[in-house]
Image 1 (cartoon, rainbow, N blue to C red):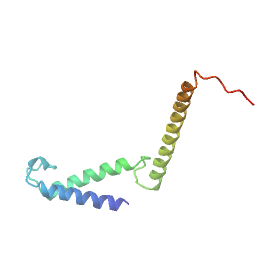
Image 2: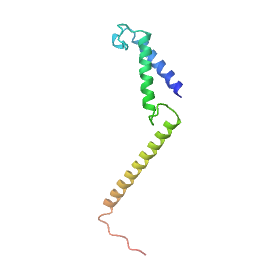
Image 3: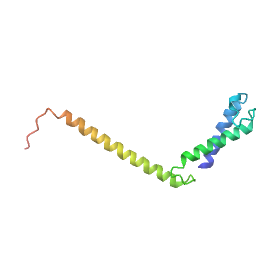
Image 4: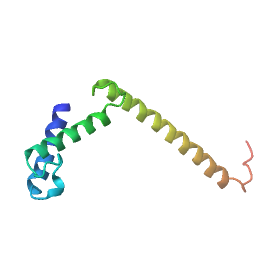
Length: 106
């Protein structure tokens, strides 16, 4: 998975660099020229950012444990959202039934 992300970043940054190779604002390494070294520096920066973001458990590795952390977080957030939705629905139903007489039990 990590290799696929790196390859994708390389392609995107490479294409971006190619089409903007004459723009001095893309001199990432500040050496006065826009060249392959800038593309390499940009790729390294992006890859490190992706790794840092993907390392959910902050153990220095991107692996299945990170996926587990993200899945647990998502499960918790879904439960919170469901609880809020249920509470809001009860409140709306309570307001809708506020002026009604209860039905007699048979």
